[in-house]
Length: 346
Image 1 (spheres, rainbow, N blue to C red):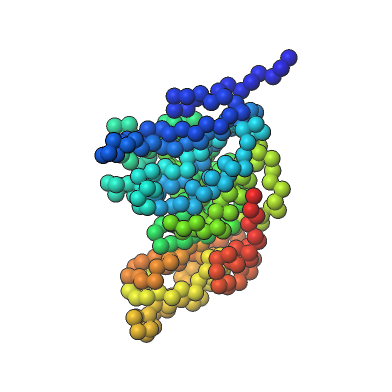
Image 2: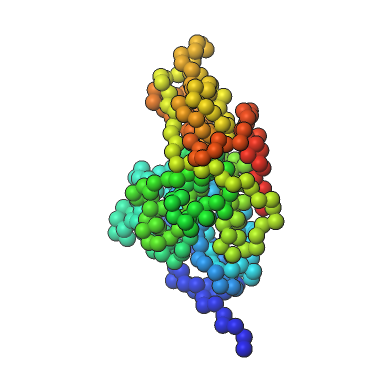
């Protein structure tokens, strides 16, 4: 007796048969020209049973790293061998992405608008559509982000590390650092958790840049999570070292306005009082040194040369347990990651 075939997957008013991939657009609104704006999706409905997982990017319209991560992940998958269903949403904030803007046209932050409303603002309608058609059909989600404007981030997972399943998937992702992050009202992660989904938030790289090291870390991590869920075969690439764990982090802020010269690099281990750079005036006179206010690992930094008093300069994560293995100073991010062991490219 032949095994019972998987049922078709229903989404957006269509049904996708097992072993097929389908691209579609879920209508959002129309532009003043009358052109329709749609939420782009690609659904990969595997022949074999397995979980339903979504992966999304560009909730903030200027965060392009995740779009390329999704493209590369999809290029490596086949519905004929895939176990389960993957819903890929490469661009959630379509309006912002087209304009190269973090926010929507009304300046709302889409990631503070979930779960949204079918009759609310533009942000609320997009959030509601994402929840109804994607999140509510899934059990696991991976939300891809980068640093905000003129900030860059070390590859890192932010998640509820006190939840056993979430922590297991965060460990499987294999980012250099994973942070225990509280849920923020209005975020996709918070709204999805309330609906019962397990969600990882990945941060890596800088807005409006295709940082290759950030993309490679994202592709490898997503594939490792799919393997941990038994949706794909375990990658043959070397297993990364265990992620460092942080439950507390903070931004070191400028003590005064000036031109900042940062020596701190992503992945650098620092101690209290370590010199991370300096602030000068336009003639080069040193106004103030920038020193670490806590021990830990540099997981983010500004890329802006001009800063005002109070601006965020360096993000330091305090590492749980033993001191991190020696991470020496390096002139660029790529070498800093090498010190944590090279992230394999799949």
